Image (cartoon, rainbow, N blue to C red; front, top):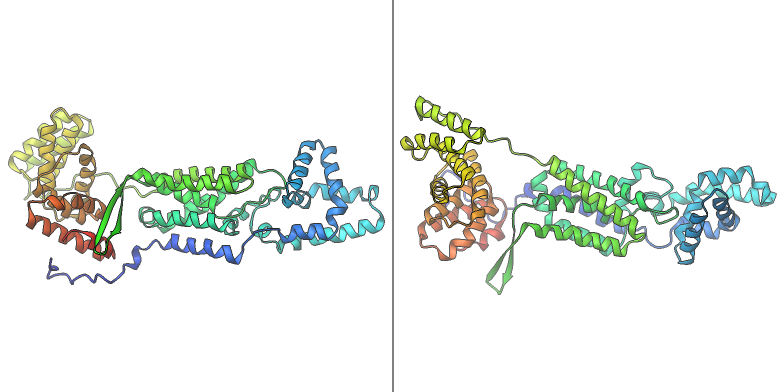
Length: 468
């Protein structure tokens, strides 16, 4: 199909950089870089120093006795069990125990010699510096030091590389659609909320002395759950099939929900402590999904466009007004009578057709009449973008009833959906009927309009997948 003489031909090789999900791409790059710049793996520097410096020998048994003396015998048992299982993070409980240090300083002469007291105080003075040199404790969140600012840096403390990659693959699947739905600003808001909520969820079940919160997976759950909550349309995939052919797949919208579920299962069974990380992922997921639903852009309520007096006379305008008023009162029968009165004189009057479509859908006593109205409405050639968007809205409602459209209406609808920038809906409709079409000229024209629109958006692969 030749381009319009009023518009230059579309360059199929030119990418539309503005349509890229830049916010999610930047976030993914930062999370991946954190794996190498700040690994946070293995034995932490601070814990190694705690054991080798002699501080652990000086105070650990005293700390366990202090716990028991203050009614925390069960906590002492848990820490001893952690250490016996090879988890050195149990020592962190003593390192962060401010009250224990204060009590020990007051009663130091009861269990240490003068030389030991001097050594203990000297080593204690070095603890903050040692923590600064330990990646996990510097960027992650210690269970005994719940500063909210640490929640936002915890995801950039490298966790398991394969778990981070799994989260980023999930983001890649939903990135383009999610950022188009929400915009970069809302993406950042959900990420920050997910970081905060994952930290809060972690603290709900973490035990003293256990590994601080680190790794990106729990916070990523907020974005993946947001994508699942906003998923309304089927997912279309184009896969290579042989050297020249391509296979088009249409997956149901609920398939997106599998992505966060897979990541959540991986978090629960591979990260320790299991319940703390599971709690972090769950709270981030619920919060991200709820926030996405609340802050997503909402289309303004449909209004009846003003009509020029030259286009529709006063009597018909009154009938149109009465029809929409009846619809507002959920009186479908009255509304249908008024809209039919307008259509007797103006068979293709847009507002009357959309009103009649809605009124008949509300009543649903005679489906044949509703299908007939839909055929007329979808056959309209509209130049106004708002009208095209409204027709796309009605098509979403109508297609659930699986009624087959006549080909003139079908191919005009593909053009209208393209004008409304509902490219996936237009693709789906075109791909379903292109192979069996008897209206070759209409088919060719509609596919040409859709192909041009896809190329303009930088979607050359999808444009080339359309039938010729």
